[in-house]
Image (cartoon, rainbow, N blue to C red; front, side, top):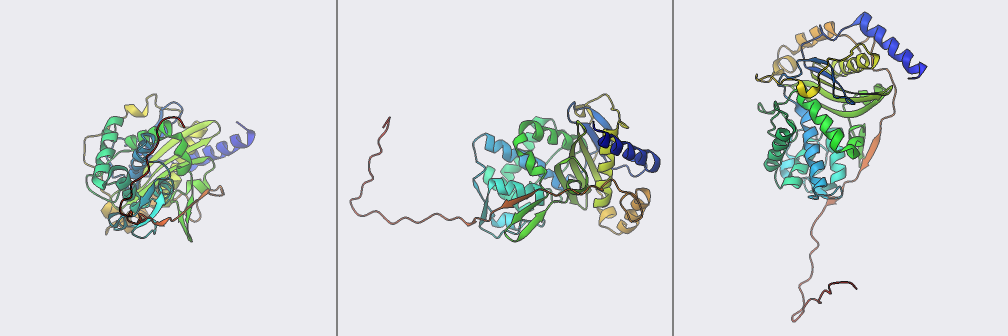
Length: 357
């Protein structure tokens, strides 16, 4: 560890210990895992069932990666926006019905922009239709031991039965890193350029917290603001899950604080692995009234008072300036079968030789 890194961690530790603590801010699920050992460094309500929102797309991506590995598709396979895909609520890619992109580009748009139309289009390409793909997602979750997780759709738009937990989402992220490391650059990309549009990530750590390598954010009213994030710094590899933030500011600052506490040694570990966290057999929390309902203004004000990091006049953990990675995707337009002329009367195709030539 260099002297510069030691000084930064020491300064961060002073800020953490002298100003704020995660514990009194809220009872929302928090989880910090050492990715090199699988040890849980910190957890709070990590087994509480929670609506995953667009963190769902981590599984959408995993199933697509598995389909590529199985030879069902390739990264160059065309992914076409069906009417069903186009009809999904935003966030979306901006592509029109019938337009296509390669599966590689579709995965970048899915992960970076969190495009709901791409989630459906990928699912239809992999499995033939959306619900068959969702069944594949649930079979994969069961095989992974994600006991709190159930999917109803491939994008995370709210459904009561769309459920996961911080524990399960951390495990899913670890499965992606273990099984498909070749795709990790997708999760560390800050923006996708598609024509004249710039489709940007909502992961503020990518541009403001040094060492961030990915992964995914998510938000619906019922879930609050969620994130799975990975950081590699000072020889450490950490994964954090923060669910139920009242704002992007709070979510991102909490995630950065968790990371800094782990990197500095303030969180020395719990002695058990993420697999050992027990998922609770209780209903998922629904935050709609607090995030989008009549109580939202009061609730957000209370959260700001309890955790003011990043607000005007208060310190922030997100002070780095990092040039985000930009990926360029291509709209292939409409892909149609080229009509061939009818063969002449009496036409017979040439015999195709077999064997060595």
